[in-house]
Image (cartoon, rainbow, N blue to C red; front, top):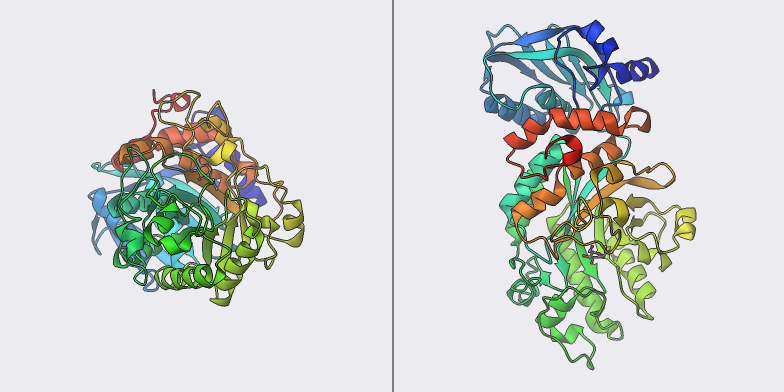
Length: 494
Ligand code: TNX
């Protein structure tokens, strides 16, 4: 691996460098995002005609389907009589871990991994080695890639509560995330401005709470059937959907639906469409009302989402019983056999050390929690809040966390290494100011690809210059996927 590592620097994404030019002549380059753990290119190339032979392990149905769709998209037929073979094989190589893979292009193409998910990642790498559009013939670099993620949590958080995003848009986003080996889609399903998940025991949550949105945003809600469909759709692409029910604050939509959840002296129980945060709270002085509600909601949520980790919110609320609430909610999730995630404020609660903290604001003291061993999901706002602009003053963006916004180079410069208990990185798109699919695409891309590289690739392989070159080479893929990305000047796209 070390040898591969050293060679990679000269062989990945540097086709213009003299060394690479001398050794591989005009062979196509292996421009991959995220950059792999190790890759070694050999001289020459493998030519592919418009037909290949497929040889696939029966236990890798998702990788197979993804590969077949990719080949169909390029007009490459699957034909047992074809000269070149693509082989997808499950192997026993413990070094690859759950998600790692090998990809070897020699006289044929061999993808191997321990799991279907590992093979899915291999197929995505192969897609990136191939052009985005159909051609007469294809040329692949002769390459040996051994790859595995640095972090197990490579996420995107989408706020569908302030402004709704359709199932169709979420499916597209899942496909695009998979292309960059992201594996967690966190859905922020509830907030003051809307409640987006059907809870059968409390139908008014969506009848009333689903009908509101932030001013200018989209209302709407998902049926449980739709969410189950989405879970399966994501799972087939290697992605786990992580639901968030934000409690005990950020609940105006729930209070407007079921007034008894509020304390008796609360006067404003109307649906809310403003931008302020931190005013609403479940009535923690009525435990006999609040905790059964939380339990019933969580029971239905868990029946939809098989994710081991379940997010219960816990952000931006000051209340004497706050820590007690977080401890009880996390314990409830634990009793139900899952593990709670809470925003970093929740570190004050007495919870089991496996409860995950999602870091976002850097202003809460979490040192003691880290000492206790709590795993961290890294979303510090000055790097990963992509509701913030790509540049200072960009219209329809926030800048409360950083007035210069979150430029691509800034995001890429984040170093996760000092966070000893980190399980990974999650970029977050809040939607107070993002009300269309086009605006969401514009905030997400290409920054989400940079975030994916930070979470997947080892520090020794990453460089911003390398990322710029490789991302530049993948622009045609973003186009082919229909992504309305920000025309990033730093990539020469503007
Ligand atoms: C902070 S992040 C929030 C959200 C907002 C976001 C806007 C977090 C836990 N709370 O409620 O949407 O800032 O950037």
